[in-house]
Amino acid sequence: MWDDFISRQIRRTNRNLFLFGAGILIFLGLLLAAGWRDTYNFIFGPFPIQGSELVSISNPDLPKRFFLKVEGEESFATGMREVDASNHDKIRAEVVALVVNKRLLLVKTRADNHQLQFTGTLTAVPAELFNGVVHQWDAKHSDLKGAFLPFMLDATGFRKGDNLWVAIAGAGFSVLGLFLIGIPLRRQLQPESHPLFTQLAKYGGLQDVRMRIDSEVRSEGGGEKFGAMQITTNWLIHAAAYKTNVMATRDVVWAYPMGFQLEKPTQPSSATPKGSPWKLAERRIRFPSY
Image (tube, rainbow, N blue to C red):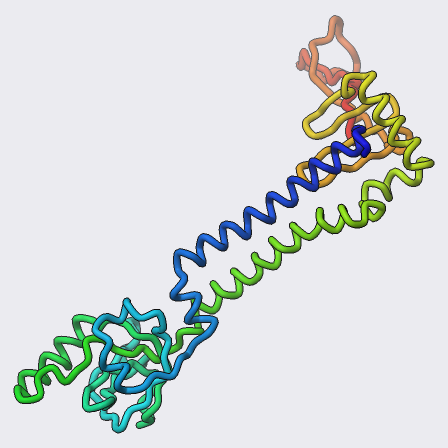
């Protein structure tokens, strides 16, 4: 197994790519683990549920499945609506009561079309709904007190809005993580396809070029270093975190910009503006640029 300068660069960039991709996947895994109920329901829901099973639920945060498809026997309007904060004439959602197994389920829906089947997520009943619907119902119908279930169904769209964008972003980062991990694995299986070898092939036999670079880097103590750039007598090497580029110095075009500064002349000159003790003196300052 080779242990020259080029091999070490390849191992370094492959390791960085693998760790970066693995880090993305681990981070996504931790997020999914923290919100496993949301992830499970978003991917596999909605789940149909029988009325008898629904009315047995006491807390909407406990069931594994909360993205449900509920069918009732009858529905009626409660008169409660959610309106736009800036335009009270714009109705964003309506609240209906759905009869399920002789109990009442509050359902928040985009429009009351008198349907008997709704798809949504179980949530707690907001205080304004409890006071405006449940409390008033219990006060008027003392014989039917407790008819409302202790939760409601939000049927305004679980797979819409922010949840959808989060899912798309998560899928995109998952693909990115797998892609980054796949790069070093593919290069391990097909080392001849590594882009660095393609760069070196134009300078002669691959093994000979690698030996020349390794020998020169060792003999010159790594050469001159400018950040991620290394310059030896015959080679210019840019060792970035995830990619290494190598080219012969003979292929590099060197540019030297000129600098100017003002200096005080030792004696008057016709080129010096009248009344000014300063003149423009040209100085050639050599700055290598790559």
